[in-house]
Amino acid sequence: MHIEPGLVTGAKMALGAVTAAGAATVSAKLVWESAAERGLVSLGARAAMATMATVVFFEVLPHFVAGPSEVHLILGSTLLLMLGTAPAAIGLAMGLLVQALFLSPSDLPQYAMNVTTLLVPLLGLHFVARKVIASDTAYVDLTYTQALKLSATYQAGIVAWVAFWVMWGQGMGAETMVSLATFGAAYMTVLLLEPLVDLVVLAGAKALRANGSSLLNSRVYNAA
Image 1: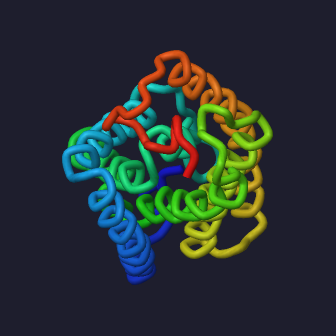
Image 2: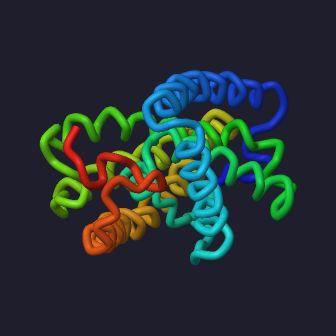
C-alpha cells in the first residue's frame, strides 16, 4: 500500500499533509480517551506492541508489487481488536516512521500519504466495529462473518486511498485504471487471509484467559 516515489509529485504532495493531520486529530482524541480509561502505561505498552507488529508486517511478512503499489498483510483489524484503536493508530504511524527512517528512506517523502492510507481506514473500522459487533459481545466470541466484515472494511479503505493517491498524482488514464485494477484484485488475497488470522489470534487469546491484562484491549474478553 506504499505510495511509490514519483507517483505524486510537487505541490500535489501537500494534500497528504492535510489528510494526515485530519487523521492525527481524530486519532489524538481516541488516544486521550484511551489514556484516561486505561492509563498511560497500558496505552504505551500496547502502542509499542503495535509499532513492533507493524514493522514486522511490512518488513518480515511476505509482500509483493502489484500495479502501482505493494501488497502487504497489514493486519489492521487484528491490531484494533487485540490492542484497541488508539494503540493501533499509534503503532501504524510509528511503524511506518521507523520503516521510512531506518529501512526504506525513499518512503519518507510519501510518509503523510502512507499514514493517511493506513489511519483513515482504521478510524472507519473503529466506527464500523460498533455497528457490526453487539455491545454484549466480547471480541473472543466473534464469528467469521463479523471478522470478514471488519477486514473488508479496512482493506477496502486501503485500496480506495491508494487509488485516490494514484489518480491524484497520475490522472485517470486507461493505463492507470488497469494498474489500479491489478492492485485491487491482488488485495483480495489479504481479504481472504485476514479474517482467519483474526479468529486464530482471538482463539489463542480465549485459550490464554488473560482477562484483565493491561497489554490487551479490554473488549477482548468483556462486553462494552
